[in-house]
Image 1 (cartoon, rainbow, N blue to C red):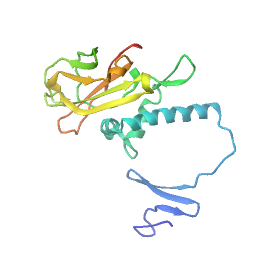
Image 2: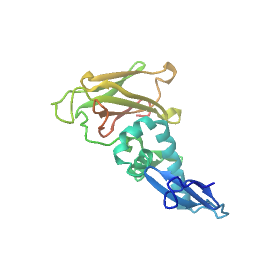
Image 3: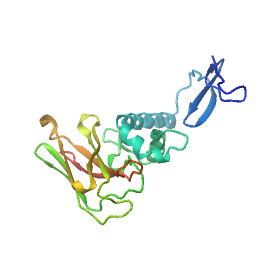
Length: 215
């Protein structure tokens, strides 16, 4: 049953016959019910659907980072939609087997004006991944109390992720992540992102590097 909570001229939600009302962000929309089709998808359509599925699955696994990093760009949609739109054109490569893969170094997981360190690095020592960065002059968007989030993606485990939100401050200058011994030799893609202390403003995510056998 369709519901009009604000009267006859107001928005509709739920289903009425072949019409569905819903709210997407701050926008009320009305659309028809989807129809089944026997048409075979064209090659471009199949490729677009495949890309959408791969990117959406990855962003879903790191949703706290995506939600924080693209909240200022979501307009009337979702932060995940904003992240997809921004990354879709450069997020993929074709592997040696011809399969579509994420282009990890090119992914942007957060956007904003908080400054990232100019000098940064990541390395593996025994069973630890260690992020390091140097201090730099303070400014409005570069403060010692800025928070840092970290992400490592295990390429050898179907893109298994480990996300550490706001686990260090800018003046910490380093952060270590313990690895499982059986996975210590795997290939990891490493990112970090800086945000303001109160969390209102974020910076551009940084692909710090790839470490492991496939690096």
